[in-house]
Image (cartoon, rainbow, N blue to C red):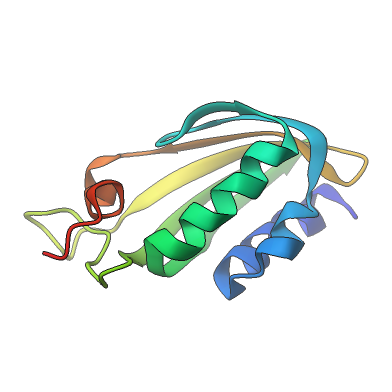
Length: 134
């Protein structure tokens, strides 16, 4: 797969909840930095994260707004539409209409993601972090 195909498949898998397909996109020795979870190393960490994603969100969509590919690197600016397990929207507390946006940086080698970084404002994700019903 080309870098662009890997990136397109990444978001396709996320948006369909195909976590098995999503995991297949990463190298076994993947390294990353995730805004909420922090630094991670190894595919087993991501395998463990799938349970949190499936139980922590009743809806989770990352909609790419802009994709830039340069060699083996890519940056995606995305919009997130999601809700925690109690169906509380991932949103800004005082401005629910404000778009929740962020970005991912990827390094891809031999058709696998070897590094990923997620960058976004953590405030809208408080309903996921606290799993409150209100």
